[in-house]
Length: 225
Image 1 (tube, rainbow, N blue to C red):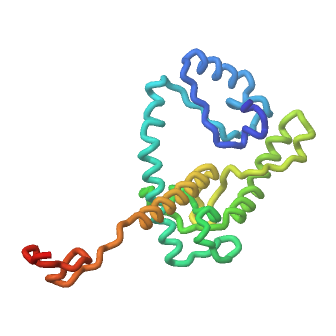
Image 2: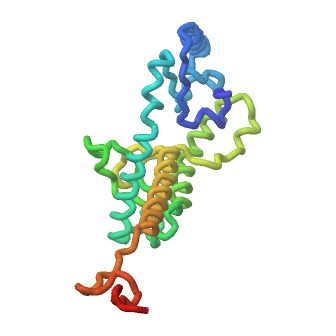
Image 3: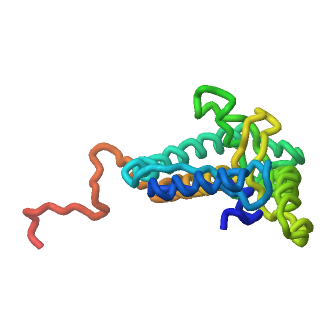
């Protein structure tokens, strides 16, 4: 499956938990001479990464997923508030960002600009603009892959989704899948904050000193009916 052009361009990771399978995979690489996806022609650099290890070694990659998701939501909420406060515009078309639609734009997810992973790039762009720019560059890579394959019919196809590219602001490498995950985390964080705001109990009005807490007329308990 991963030897097909439509999969090669995606930043996938293959995990091998069987040592014997790892050896066979490496032998296959050497035989085909073009990496783990050797069916598309020699010299083609793919984006698929291969990792190996036992199940116990892979557990840390998934055990803290909830914590990492919470951190991502907090980070994206801070970025959203910062961009909205400064009324930042799309880097590509210079038009306004619709901050009421938190799923209509993407921000740079590159962490190559600073040693601090939360020192974010200030790039923001409409989702459509970002997709168009990245696809224009990504399709050149896809065409190179298809031209190396044996099927001539594939050369006329165009990719529908980008995989990533270089940020025009910080020049760091951006990952499309990570940007979409960040966008979803932002949407969720804003929805949770709004829900908490609506559920926040209203403050009770303070009554003057000496007034009764009940809206009833007090009578003398010793007075005869």
